Each structure stands twice: as structure tokens, then as C-alpha cells.
Image 1 (cartoon, rainbow, N blue to C red):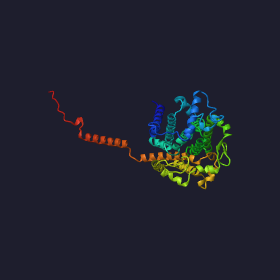
Image 2: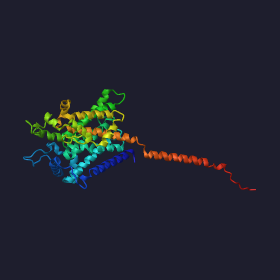
Image 3: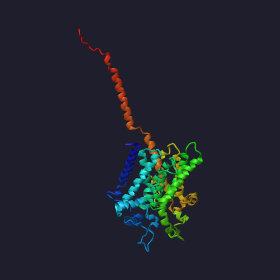
Image 4: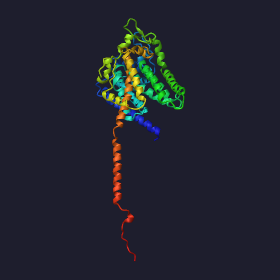
Length: 436
């Protein structure tokens, strides 16, 4: 078996391990099935939309129009329906008409994909296998990412592609032609999937994180001996390729939603309704879904008054490991801390003097709920926790190394002892038989 086959086999085993661990952790959603992800918006929207999607795609008819709502409306125009998300289409083709059990399993598959993608990204950043699995669990099993799954599955599905986008982009940037290789193309594809999954918010925040990560790689991975302009061109061309490919794959959704959004509203109940194409929501709406300063203590207490899953809790174990991760040498920790500080300022919104700045940042002010950016904080601290766990494990003597070293020293002592007690054959007085 060559090295490529071993690598593929090893990664397949890792994927199956992530799937098994995910099903064990969320076993109550499958067996004995005492819990489910389908309630609230998932039951009122996600479940019936998946039924409509399954009925049409299984009949090989794209779901272009929904006749069940008043006079009808363009089904893919409503972004949350995820009418062109290929994973949904493939799943309903393979499993038939959705049931709550089938949709819970589909969500669990996305949890496993998030864990595997985070493990791949962390191993590429130098983290070993088992700590990378821990980082993957911290990223998706708890905190803001996990709370999205039972609240709005279409948003949750878009969040899980973040580590995949960064993993593929870093590999593509390290290639000879950064703008023209399969890894950069895969980064664009996964970014598009985060948009096709059913909500623009994950796409906006994933794109933001990708841009910041590209700036970090520009300094960390720049080729020695080349000018800054050449290194800058490599990063910029790779980002441009990602943007073009993401646009091409997501164009069918963008085109379907354009006319619908021109006549739709994002928010009603104020003096004047907010149109879908309105780039920034009113400040009173924007500040409604933000962190307050007491909510910062949720990193320890797990209690937060913020709406829509706004919490910093990642478990005490992961928090301790993340603190250890701050001691890992290199520039990665400083990048992660800088991103975390920026994310918290955005999530605090109008509760800090910098709230006005976060509110006026392009793209970010299109997201109605600033607390939804907290999954980027969770990603950063999951990476720190994995690095911290590896540093802690490296400080523990390896049992197998100790046993091997101990066995070899015992063998050397035994051989030395025997060599001193045993005489060479030529020195022995062997009696001779006389022939005379």
C-alpha cells in the first residue's frame, strides 16, 4: 500500500470515528429517541420545506413554485428553503420522504462533518490526532454552533463549513499556483455550500473569517526571498478564485432570490418595515440580539440572558485547555486572540463605545443578530483548546516509550552480566583423546 492509499484509509477511519463519536454523544436523538432537533422553527419551517423539496426532487422536478401559500410564491426565492443544497437533494433521493428521525440523522451527519473538518484543519496547523478530535468536539458539540441545530437547522448547516473552507484555502495557498489548483477550488465550493445550505449569515461570517485568515497566512507563510507584492498577489489571486467559484456554484440560489427579495420584508412591527435588500437593520433591532457585559461570565457559569443562543460557554475543561493553548509558541495564538476580541466587540454591539463602529461595518451590519458571530469565537477557542491539550499531553511521559526504554536497559544489563560469566570456547580445557 502506497502513501496515498494509507492517507486515504487513515482519513476514512477518522471520518467514521467522528461519525461514531457524534452518534454516541447525541444518541438520545436516535436511540432510545427521547430527544429531537425538530421543534420551534425547525418543525414549523424546516420540516415542511424538506417535504416539499423531497416531493419535487424525487419526481425530478426542481421545486420552483409553492402553491400551498395563498396564491403561491417562488419556493427557492425564500433562501431558508435550501432548495438547491446538494446534500439535501442527495439525502432525499437516498432515503425517501423525510421523517423526524431521518432529519435528525441528517443533522447528526453534519455534526460529524464539522468535527472531521475541524480535526483536519487543526492537524494541518500542527495539532496531533487525538487533541484535534477534542478540538472538533469543542467546536460543534456545545456552545453557539450546537444551539443553532435545534433552533434553525439551515443556519447550523452553513456554520459547519467554516473549518473546511479554511483547511482547503490553506492547502491551496501552499501550492505552486495558489489561484489555480483543486484545493482553492474546493475552498470556493465549500464556501458556496455554506450559502446554499439555507441562510446568508453563515456565508457572510465564513467569508469574513476567510479574509482575516488569508491576511494571517500572508505574514506566516510568505515565501522567503520574494517581494511583498508577489506574496500579496498570491493571496489575493487565491481569494479571487475562491470568490469566483463560490459565486458560480451559488448563482442559482442568488438568481432565484433576487426578484423575491425585492418584494419581501425582513422585519415587521416597526414604524416602517425593513425590506430584504436593506443593507442595515435599524439600530434598535440590531442591539436587541446582543451580548451584555454580565453575559461575558457565561464562559464560566453557562448562564446568559442573551437571546438566540448567545453564550460563551465551551465547558470548563475546554476553557482550561484553551488557557494552556495561550502558552504554545508562535503567531497563531495572537491571531486567534485578536479575532476573539474583535468578535466580542461585534457581539456586544451597542453595549460598548465601539458599537457604532461594528454597526457600520459593511456586510456585518446586514446580519440582524450580532450574537450569531459568536460561533467564530467558538472556533478560535476550540483551536486554542486543542493546542493546549496537546501541550499538556506532551508534558506527560509516554508509557510505551518508558516501557521500551526500560526493556532495552534490562536487556543490556542481562547481556553484560552473561558476557562476564561466560568464558569463550577457546579458553576451556577440553580433554583430548590420545591417538598413540
